[in-house]
Image (tube, rainbow, N blue to C red; front, side, top):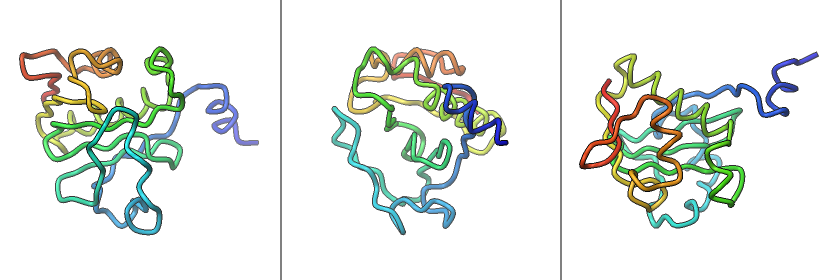
Length: 143
C-alpha cells in the first residue's frame, strides 16, 4: 500500500521538485501546455533561462521568473481565503526555499504574486512562513 498517496489525499505532506523551467524533466511548455495564468495575473509562464518551476505531486504548483521578481502560484481552489491552507502550495514554497538556501537560486526578491503586490498578496503569509522576509521592494529570501 502507498501510504504517501493516502497521506497526500488527506492534505498531508506532498512531494515537491524544483526544476529549471527549460529542464527536459519539466513537461510544461513542451509535451504539456502551460496552464492558464492564475486569476489576477497577466504574466505567463515560459521555458525561459533562469526561470524555475516547482512540481508538486507531478503537477505545476509554482513558476518563478529569473530572480524571483514574479511568482505564479496555482492553488487548488479559487477562493482567496483557502490559499494559505493549501498544503500543495506550502510544499512548493518550502521546496523553493530549500533550493535557495542550498545555493541553487541565490537571493530571491518577489515583487508580485499572481499579479498582486507581494506584500499584500493573500499568499504573503505562505512565503513568510517558509522564511521570506518583508522589504520595501517585496518579499526576500537570501540564498
